[in-house]
Amino acid sequence: MENRPDILIQGCLKKDRKSQRSLYEAYKVPMFMLCLRYFNNRAEAEDVLQEGFIKIFRDLKQYDPQKGALRTWMNRVFLNTIFEHLRKKKDFIIHSDLNEYDNNSVFGEEEILADLSTREIIEMVQQLPTGYRTVFNLYVIEGFSHKEIASTMGISESSSKSQLHKAKASLKRQLRVIDPDSGKTYGRKKVI
Image (cartoon, rainbow, N blue to C red):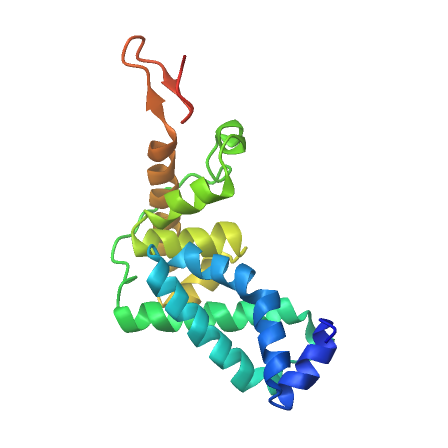
């Protein structure tokens, strides 16, 4: 069977198992990576992956190719599934505000990031508290504005800014290694 999205969609709408399997196989890795960015354990990300695909197959009739790519629509379905899961856990409630925040680049240390693999970056982001991780992913990876994040998460814009600032500070701490002999700060790579 050909893996063109329009053919897969038609098959899935007819409840054809081969089409559903092909669609799942074609998109499971990027959707799982999306889930992993929001959850710090693999089992939880796998649960949300399954839940997301159930919704994809259930709601596929709502997808309109004139409004955008299938992957974009699927990302939205998965983000909604992720938010529902986080709300059920009540794990991303954010209480603090910060009026001042660093509006520079994500880390301010792009040369250090260039030395990291995608897996290392994901592992670092997964170690963040849920609120920090969620705002960081929405702002940096998904490209949401603080206004959109506030609306999506039910928080204030200043809370969104605060969580992003704290996430960036935490990630910067994870990136740094201090040489005990000289006291100089270096990137994660060990100094020889």
